[in-house]
View 1 (cartoon, one colour):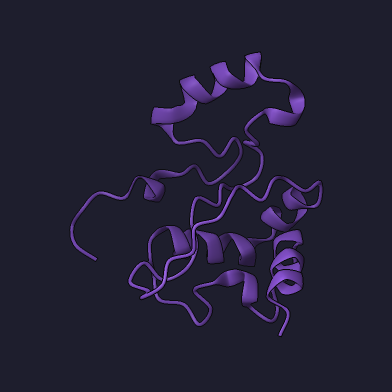
View 2 (cartoon, one colour; view 1 turned 135 degrees about the vertical axis):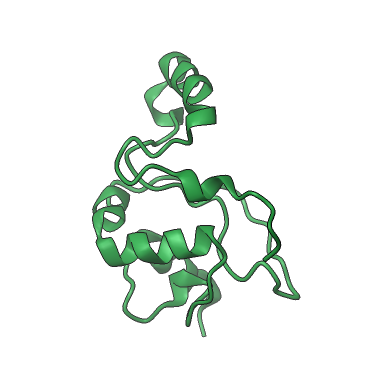
Length: 116
């Protein structure tokens, strides 16, 4: 990776998981938004995943929030997967939802939709 600044390197280590530069606008949005549309700041964001140099890029819609997400996001191993992904570090499973030992609502969704 080049020397370009990556803001995800500054994501707080504990909740609320909001970048400093985004905090004011996220808080203002959440004050005015209905509960089901608020930005979830108690779970780590998942802005992208995978290898930034991949030859194929899949654009998807926001998969939403599952009530089980905070529990998954509290797991230190999952946090390490996400934070490595933010920084584009090498990983055995850049598409971490396919990691065989990682279980989450996101993995369930991908497994169902990718099938075999």
